[in-house]
Image (cartoon, rainbow, N blue to C red; front, side, top):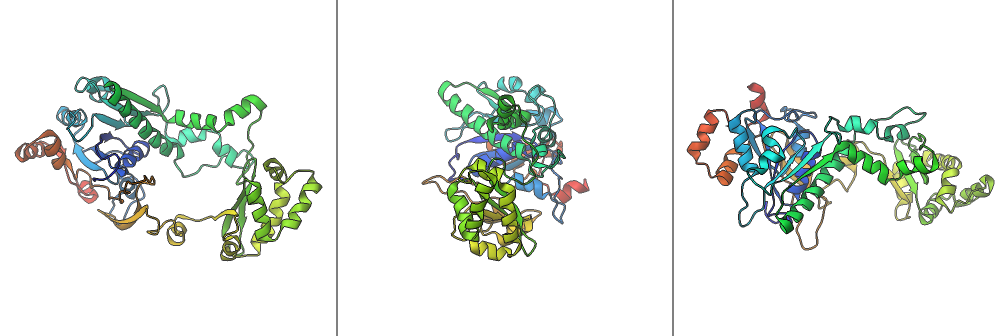
Length: 415
């Protein structure tokens, strides 16, 4: 775990699902010690699909790589007291802690007010659904964002499987955590940092100009399917049944398309005919139907391999559509040729290719990917290291059902 740029930072995570686990894993990939506390038997996300043949959750393991796992009876005063002691543990000379990351209801013993009585400078990152504290998840936030309507056709919404708001929220949480920790270094004050998932969506829609467009122009972006709004871009079918995305957002890229496809002269006829300037994004967008017709015919007469050869080194901005299997099998960026990737032995799942953190720092070696722990794998070690408990004391906690671990998915299923 040594060597990361956040090596001296310790974070306790009490979470479920995507947003907070993404935040915690991002910090762990940068070298922070992230201790995830779960109830005995696992939290609500511990069995979420997809599953390996063993029954282990590939989903859970993928979102918790590089963390340490502690399993406690969080529904008991004894389990809560241990969790509180881990969260509020004083700093050591070589490690800074007192930081809690959660997207679970933070009331009672786990409220910032209650925890601050045990450590005054406690930092708590808390994710909610809406700003008023009411519930929301990525799916209910996304449907209200306008994007499924704009992505569809004829106002029929199209959902997507990417939990974009959860991922963005997880990264916002890491930014808030590091900002609060930096401020604490200056003034010694603890803070509760709150983030609403729906506010992540609203900020993004506003920052991209969609709210201002309605207010200033009185227009709503229409459903356009796969067409790129305000510029040139769309999907095209190849002769061998694959699809490619071709995009031009600059004049250089637009000219490159014409040169690589041999369609420059035919493209040149479109501007005067439609009375638009094809050297502008707006002009190309208005004339996209005619441009697309030419590109459809060109792509339909060629295989994906032939299109790749024609576009290689041409300056054309393009990419093939891939399913997850094709991404793994065909894309060299998703392989050990990319220094972000490495192979790990994941308990309950097997030997797999996995990504490390995507950030690179000059003079700082990138930490390799590390497997997720089994549930409760580090319970005994963490209690001994951080709380100074003896083996006998930890044994009594096991006997009382206050702590558990390590446990495989199969063991938990059998209980």
